[in-house]
Image (cartoon, rainbow, N blue to C red):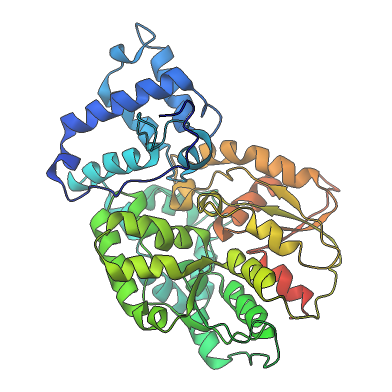
Length: 447
């Protein structure tokens, strides 16, 4: 083993079907092994709140070492993890193939899987993760749902905090009455027959968020792809399971992986690229699913076929060339690189994509927004999430020339906008939030 673990990191399949995975004594042994290594390194001290909590726990113990820390006190460390994968991908020098074999996020997942098996995940938390059901129901009366979930609603939001544990001040996603799937069927754009990428075939995996909350992202993607000769079809069998994974419900994630992979198998076998609209979902399809169900060939094939949306546009530009017709936009822009985009190990694709717009010079912010999926809206986490994301808000706000702010993750973008608005002073410019950089490219094309 070379010093410093200079090899590319690798990840082992998650051994969640092994009874030892749920053995609490063995889990405690592994937690102590990993936490002791983290205590001696501390490279991740400023990455998220898990590590400061861990280091304070140790420093304030009787011996100042892990041996006098009670295992019951580990829970706040686990609870602060958003499964963003940044410690594994960009910080930790001890990930496999290093002999220390650290995978902090998947260790936190193991802890939560045991909690799930013991019935420690609350009913309200489980209901919040049922995104397909919630999206369908809210879409039936989107106006009422959005009124009730508005953070300015002093009638409903305190009640939501009390019953669902959702912080009364946290900005929540809006729902639409007409999903991306229905919009795409009703008004499919015509693909340009003479565009450079006309020979490509693709399907867009809508994702639950893209389907029920931000269909404009999918519509922008369809228009940009059609302009470049690709008549992409929108598909959406069901949610990828990221919300359930956050709660340690690995069985549900595995079931979803197999079902979605089977549904998309005809497209994959036809040689079509699968484009995911949200980085978290792309990460699930590309990396997490194959580690959870490593024996499923359909899941493996889907993983190889999947591209993140920004990644796919940059790929087209490099291999085929983009269609002409983009015009400069009337203002500067700041782009936030979401953690789950960075965890895909593909480079700064959102920034690369925006630089394809004439005269565009986006300011790039590459830090955690503090949202962490459903984690950041919860009563116990919201204030911590705002603290973690504060450097992002400051960076994007400092770029006063930016007319537009965007994140690859719509949830992160919403969180960033809330952070900017909270610290705004009278006379400060108010940037426009766009839920994905693809919307700016579509705007440059005139859509």
